[in-house]
Amino acid sequence: MRIAVRSLNQFLIIAGIAAGLLAVAIPALADYLGPDRSVSTWTMERLVCEYQAVYDPPGGGYFGCSLTLYEPPDGTCESNVDAYFTSSACGWPAGIGCNTVDCDVSRSSSIEGCNDGEPGCREVEHVVDQPPATVSGSISCGVSGSGGWCRGDGELSLSGSEPLSGYTILALEGTRNGEPFACSGAACDVPLFEGANDFDFWAISSWGDTSLMGSAGGLLDSHDPSLSGSARERRVTMAGTSRA
Image 1 (cartoon, rainbow, N blue to C red):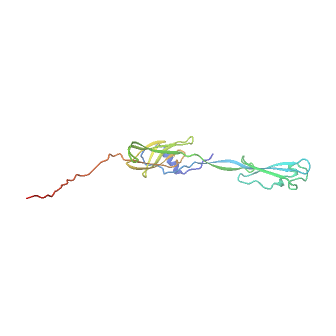
Image 2 (image 1 turned 135 degrees about the vertical axis):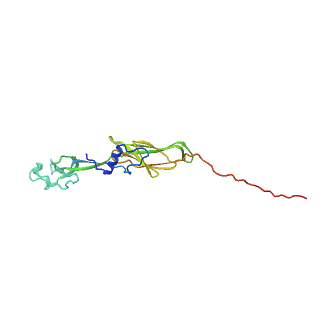
Image 3 (image 1 turned 180 degrees about the vertical axis):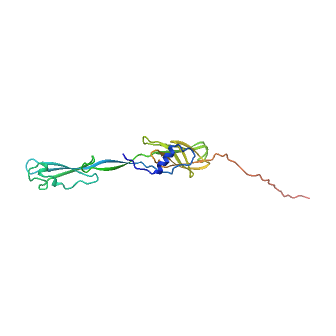
């Protein structure tokens, strides 16, 4: 099996992660790449063209003959093969052949494996897309407030998963309000900052690519409410009359 070559930049990124360079809340090392799970394999194949000719003359009995031809796997089977069905090739009586009498010729074709050097045998590439890594993220809040705001202990919980045997999630990366963050391993928690928090995130796989990008958002206001102002004195003067 041959695997399609990925960019040198991707492998340098993965090598750095594997060396333990990532920790929570440090700048992310890699840009978002997305899944790249196309795997190419090459097999030796050929096109098998099978023909069956039947000559049914008046009276009893009939004559039958089969023929197999080989073509390259991307080729086509011949449409007119009457000349192949001769008395010498099929063992029919002399002078009887599909180019001289009316034969009924049926055709079928299939692809089969073969060995290099056999008629029609060629190397064929097959591309298969393997399932990508996945990532999930959810906002949790220890102290809930009103209007969708979190009052305390708010965080984004991330988890990555690698479906292919022999490969692992090396790190989780993303941005929080445009600023990069990264944490090693397949799971971590990223705290919310005060105010609005807009997250984009993805998982980095040892395969050499990332998961699709996920997103989440949360609001945090952990400060106690306060009231400010000043008191102002108000005087009231009343006017009146007096009698003599």
